[in-house]
Amino acid sequence: MTDNKENRIVTKDLNVWIGKNHILKDVNIGIPPRGITVILGPSGCGKTTLLKTFNRLIDLVDGVKVRGTVLLDGTDVYHNTQDIEGVRKKMGLLCQRPTPLPMSIYDNVIYGLWVHGERSRKALDRKAEIYLKKVGLWAEVHDRLTDPATKLSLGQQQRLCLARGLAVEPEVILCDEPTSALDPTSSRKIENMLRELKSVYTIVLVTHTLRLAELLADHVIFIYGGRVVEQGDADQVFNNPTKKLTKAFMVGEIS
Amino acid sequence: MISKKGWDRIYERLLTVPSLIVVSVFISMFAFLIYRSLPILESKSLGHILLSSRWNPDRGSFGLFPMIIGTILVTVIAMVIAVPISIFSAIYISEYAPRSVKSTIKSIIDVLAGIPSVVYGMCAILVLVPLVSDHVGPFFGVDTTGYSVLTAGITLSVMIFPIIISICVEAFQSVPLTLREASLTLGATKWETVKYVVFRKASPSVYSSILLGFGRAFGETMAVAMVIGNLPFVPRSVFSPATTIPAIIATTYGEMMSLPLFDSAIMFSALLLLIIVVIFNILAKVVIMKYSR
Image (cartoon, rainbow over all chains, first blue to last red):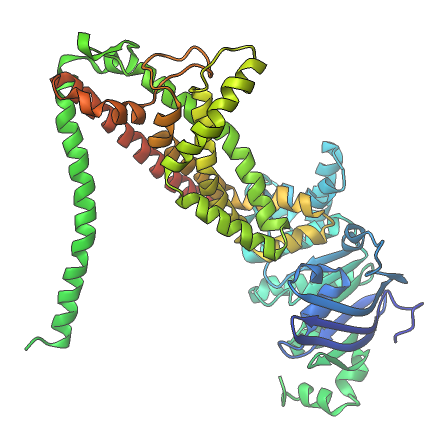
């Protein structure tokens, strides 16, 4: 599974320290280009940290040290000459809680396009409509696009964040517990959307909820205590886990 | 024997006393100023006091217009200089400075805020006054003693740096990390993130810090009185001497006892100052409340 050619994201001997805490230990994983890869593991095992090493959001953390390699389509994300904005643009991020920017609904959707230099009002209007429709938000907000995004419900905000991420045309979508702050109906909408998107995008989803993983995963990477315990196709990991720790997690003995 | 509950009630009552003292001092100051302002308000119209530019207490002219103009000019100069410098340095401190630099600059700013205004005035006399009279004035082809509106404005701007900077730094740093991450993952650069997200999110506090700085500049007395020249005329240019409301109060207080209306006119200027500063403080609060959600 760690073969360079087949996988979109590959890590090699990835180690991450924050201060004196050794968060990730010798992580070697591969994430295939299509489908949903779920990074599963109990709270505090380093899942989110791993996700943030992919698009170098980890750089924002004080006292962080990263060793090892992260490859995106074969190029080293941590190379000195790497264009970080370019890497980040390729990977959309959907957080645990929605993160509407302090501006209008419309401005949120076009923010990414705007910072990448798109200034044509026509093009921006068109893109805003396309991506709001894509996340099923257009009908709900088309008559109040200039309202502050914070006026939307949490579920709507999360779909807005998804639309905003898709608008910059990423190749990878990183999701960090994207439904844990939402009500069941909104959660289902996001889940369905991810299922639709997985044929086009590489989706990486971090969660500690087994139910969500079983519902969405095509591939699973199980992490415990900063180490990869097991990785493989969802079927195999869920039904025939080879490691004792994985089994214990599946039956709820550890969490 | 007083029960535990009884003591509790006694403490509750006792603790209201200090706040009552504070509030009543404020109210009585207000009442006192109004009472002492009455004679001038009875003998001259409000319009005359505020708009006449003749200030000649010996002849019974009490036009406060020169002081009002002086105050506004000095404050505006101070704000024009202080606001951009303070905001940009706050951005640097909060977003770009390495951690060690950050804490050093922050403590320097705290010290700046605590320096007595007479010290700022002294330094301005020693450095700024000669600079304005020997270099800035001649550069613009103006003959000036250096004791001028401009000098006072520059001095004031330095005094309000710490207010605006410390409030802005606080506000920028309280913008959640997740918002910055959201902007960065869309491919925005750090500067774009600061400009469009951090600054915008913190803007209510930025506005309120500007209003508080304004209030401080408006009411500052000592440093201004030391460098503005204290002449009760409408200044012809920023290089002319002038005076401000606080400065006229401080510099004329001793001589006014013999003239009853003079005393009252000064009390009225104090009242005016109090009202304006209170308004600015309330505005700052309103801005915070209105825009922070």
